[in-house]
Length: 399
Image 1 (tube, rainbow, N blue to C red):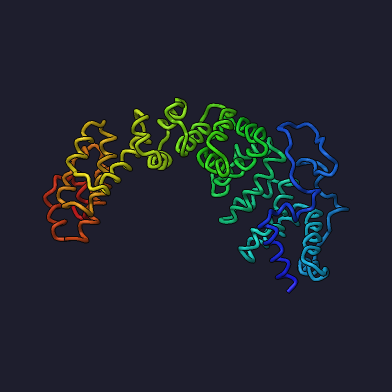
Image 2 (tube, helix red, strand yellow):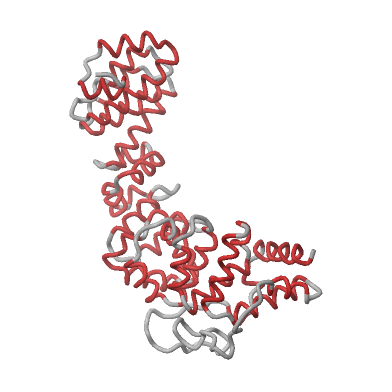
């Protein structure tokens, strides 16, 4: 019963902010991006690599396997037990901290989000962050926990954190780091900017869109723009600016740098932003994948509004080839289930042969819908359509 009450109390602490349940002497504080000695309050823990690591005399030499339950059972209230557990965690050396944290990631998934486990990881961020990072890099869950760890480390030792990130390969763990930096940037923008500057050519390891999306939670686009003005030119700034440009109310027509950043965006990121911007991107951007994605999105909407194919294709003929392909793709997706399939098929065949992948993808979209209506008619159309051998094989599985 006491263990249940302790857990319930921890969950309550998490709901109201876990720092309220953590001893004040071990709450994080920002440290400058330098190697100068820590000069903060004596009540605050000094930065990584200092005497904040417990000495052999301070650290418990061994802990019984059931120490956790013994501590809980020896206190009358959950709050007293919680403070006692934190005090023991604060005295642990890195190996003991890791042993404790591992039980939270293996025994019960919900434990990994409990404030005492988060606190233990944050202690590792203070006294042996590399050990904590190695452990988290092997985990496939626990975003909230890892985000707190990396945020704590970055806030306490920005230079060390940046050095580690320069060499760390991209993974499910590092994917969450932009959110950690975004949280830091709201209260300590100088630290976040210093880390991004320190990363230099390695700043591509930070997803700028993910960073800005997290930053904008509870903030306005003006706040985002003010922060971005402090960042150096580069991919992170471009990506973050692209995310900001898709925020409702952002004056894209007045911001040339944002339009240039959008024109350089590629891949899935460009498709996501293009769909969100829609007609605005078509109007204000002259070229690029974001504009193409916006055209695709608008053609999908045209299909939903029952606009005639001939009217839509008149517009598409005015576009450059790549954008015309994007528009046809969107129109086929929206019209496949509405119009006569053969007419939609003729539209799909307007994609030039040099865009082989796009032709196959669009025709496959049409045929998947068509065979549900009339498999025989769809088969006859495929047999007679002017397809290349590659297209025919990819669509039918036959030579």
